[in-house]
Length: 509
Image (cartoon, rainbow, N blue to C red; front, side, top):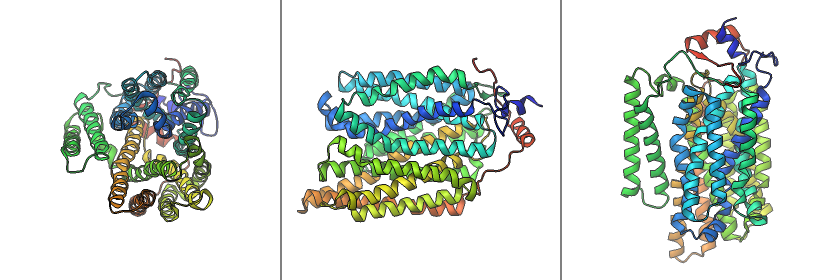
């Protein structure tokens, strides 16, 4: 057996199941997935606690936005670099470095004595995600060489991501009301410590071999700088008009850097982001439509929170508990996605999820009113939106990693996660301001604030639904058929050898 084939079978060579993979692979998945759950949850867990944070640390209204923006900016900007660093220097190593950074930053957030310390710590938290998230997801194609098992593992991963986004609001509201807002950060620390202890024991190191591990500095700087500038421009659009210099300068500057990066990567001998990576139609389409669904998801979560707190006077805890139906249905949807993908394919599941998500947004827009009750006004939209987002996320992860070998798994993970963060920022920069401007204009015209808010948020949901429908049509038109196929170890070994991919089998190196 060739060394490449041996490595693809599981790193340490154990016969751990039908695919001959590492017998520790499912435990390894549990560890990295638990950490990923915390990373995703940390994006939404803060939202419900923002009023308490503002009063506790004396934030200005403008400064308070940076409790969220600081995390999104650094994570979105550095994810691509983090993914490639994992490929080059070791996925396990970068995952552990990211977890350590994230855990320390979480402790600093919880202990923040003033607003500046909290915002600075959130910047560092975002860097921790940028290092840990792509490395963790990039480990899955290496841990699960069998395509059927890989699809199941990626389905579990995507499902947990969908659930984590919803659970964040529940946990944030409950912890803020019953204990203190600081504990929404402290809860990250035990998970980080457990991950740091277990990871060296349950998974081998893996990285690209057979090629220079020298980082393409020009490509890294231009890609990271471009993404940071684009995300910053999108975040500024939430507060300034699209024609202002605050928005246009970073957006145009970031796009110019990304164009330069593409030209550079096409010419350099050892690119950080090989352009061949983008030749796969399914991967490219999946990453593009990911922007749409994450824009819709985070817009819904943000506006629903404001709606129930401002229009219906919900407390933080009651707001968090209102998300329980969405959370439960996200679990159900993720489970259905994992079962359905091997049977009907990723394309069918993904298109169904996007059309269903659009229907859920339209239902939410139609049922919102100033005098709506939870059962008749909120719950139907929460149930549908939770289910179809749970259905979508595992399919998105599978599509984004379609055809990826160990050589580019970190890169593929970084691209997908960066698109998720970009989608979140884009939704908050476009759909939310549309809702706010509608509210402001109609209040000035004499409409009551509650009615104006309800109608403005419903308008944003209808636009989000149109975006999801357009994305679903693109999925039907462009996505290839992706399904779980029977593994051919010799063919995969040949493919990996051609790609110069290998896995370092030493578990504790």
